[in-house]
Image 1: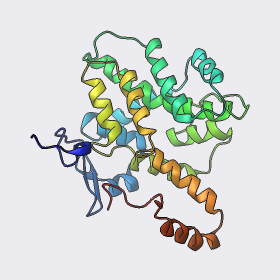
Image 2: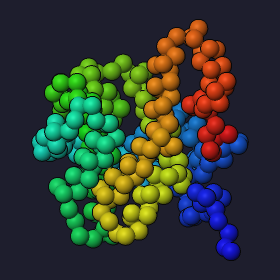
Image 3: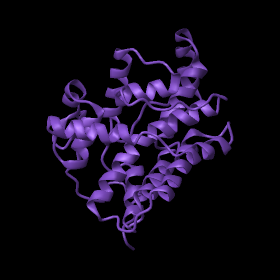
Image 4: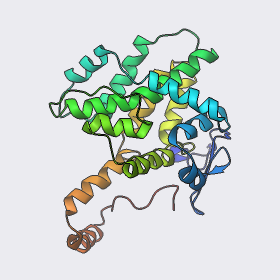
Amino acid sequence: MRDFFPGLAGIPAAKSSISFVDGAEGILEYRGIRVEDLAAHSSFLETAFLLLFNRLPTKLELEHFTRDISHHRRIKYRIIDLLKSLPEQGHPMDALQAAVAALGMFYPFHDVREETTRYLTAVRLIAKLPTIVAAFSRLRRGDEAIQPRDDLSYAENFLYMLTEQVPDPALAKIFDVCLILHAEHTMNASTFSGMVTASTLADPYTVISSAIGTLKGPLHGGANEAVIHMLEEINSVDRIPMHVDDKLLNKEKIMGFGHRIYK
């Protein structure tokens, strides 16, 4: 009988120079650069360039990349109509998956191996996903979507589209660092799902839509959401001991602990 490895545990699925993680030692690197250094000295868009092109950009390259992202932030009005037609109580990840899949119908191409098209697709996805997320967040509350502003940074613009207020620079910096820390995490479930889809030469919008669907699951990105629900349930600091004791007594999971990689 052949060996069986549930969940492909311990089975290398690919070789990659994009990132390195050592959960036991608390190490995360992007293209050989420690994530602590990127968080302190880089920006999300500069980090995105590094991940895409295997090097940090020059000043002119970063200006060009940033300008391209800003230019492609807006989404078609029919994407807005699609978001408006979704149930207000629907899960935001479902809305994002549907909208990203729909983007592929507006920007079709026939050869995913063509370099210029690949670049434009990466730019569109990085630029438009914040617009989609912010738009659905407002629409489900009965508010109109807010158009992006080209004069704001990537993090500033997203927070502005959520609140219609230019955020405090410190808050924008915190969010930008959060984006850097979440930018790449090696062969996780959603990356694996995306790679399987990409192996069929499906278009990148389909690939990312597939990965988003995987990320939603409660054993992946959905675990982060469960932490928020847990904190809302606890509600106050003085209730923490009672909540933890109840979970331990009933042998229930305490969300936010026991990550598979980050031990």
